[in-house]
Amino acid sequence: MRLWNIVVAATLFLAVLSGATLVGFKYGEPKQVVGWLLGLVSLLVGAVVGPVLNYCVKRHHRPVLTGGVEGDKGSLVETVKFTPDEEKRASQIEEALAIEPVTPSLRIKHARLRVVNAGRRDSAVRCRGTLTKIERYNGTTWDELPYHDAGQLIWAYVGTPERELPRNVPAYLDLCFVMNLNQTLILCLNPLPEMYKKIINGEGSYRLHVLLTADNADPVTKVVRMNWSGKYDQLSVEMVE
Image (cartoon, rainbow, N blue to C red):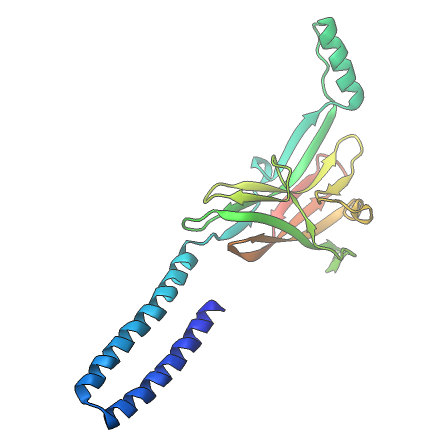
């Protein structure tokens, strides 16, 4: 929009300059008119080329958001935690200086989207991932599920919906997670409305449409397919586009 405003202003300026030049040649001295014309042209070049060059440089260095999946390398990550009872027992055993530690039984597997700022220089400011659409495969076509919001996804390890993304430093956006104790697939929305807590819990293949945005980058949509059999160890993710 700024570039368009500059073009319009330059066009109007040239029109006025052309009219004034014709009048000057008709009623004034040619040498004076030429000098006056060169001064106006220099002013025009400085007024137009400067902002345009500045815009092009900023555009050249701005962040470029990309997304993908890496399988078990970073897009399917398992963590182990204590249940509340195990945590209490572990604390008691530690106080009693027991030799045998308590082994945590709660396992959590996260499906994640790998996001990279592939720009030339600038960091992506306030980078966010928004879940805009959910689809489920019915055997022949993809049906859109009744998800009518734009929920914010959470950045892994940071736990917030937005973060700064330096150039060529990958970050991971949590899409969903499943726990081995209840075999339930849950979206990583912040916040997670009650109506969406079980929207992807059934067995099948799902497509999540994720909009990647930043204050200083063009938005881009990435689609991730998740295959879920209803069992903890049978969750897979792959990129669609």
